[in-house]
Image (tube, rainbow, N blue to C red):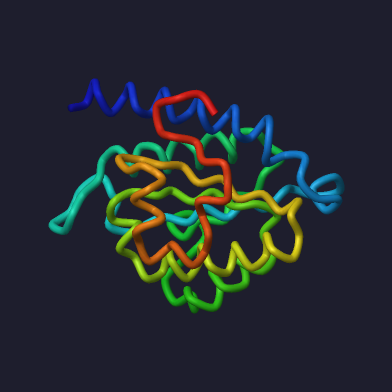
Length: 171
């Protein structure tokens, strides 16, 4: 399992670097003068360990993308596990990030397709995209296919209209 996870992390890191180079760093004029703000949406159920449902692959992909983007030096990653601290009004902070981010990555796993929070975030990001087609949203599919997304609560966000990166394949 460790070897498999390491392979997934390597492929996800390569995916994140390709995505960062090609899509996330040249998005808006604000990215030219300051760090590009990239929001990462994911299901909290996709974690490395714990008692509830665990998706090690989705967790590894999220960590690889987070690290690749943060390591670039041109991106401020907006991710709950990095930016939220005890006592923070987490929903208000995430809502602010949804409104201020320059781009977004949606980590879509079986758990994410069931998450009301991921559906909410995808819909807000979709609204932002409808106002500004230059706004980038990159779905990353982990353990699912795009038809699964279309048959989920994320359907109203029209995620199928955004070009997705499938975990383990070049973007």
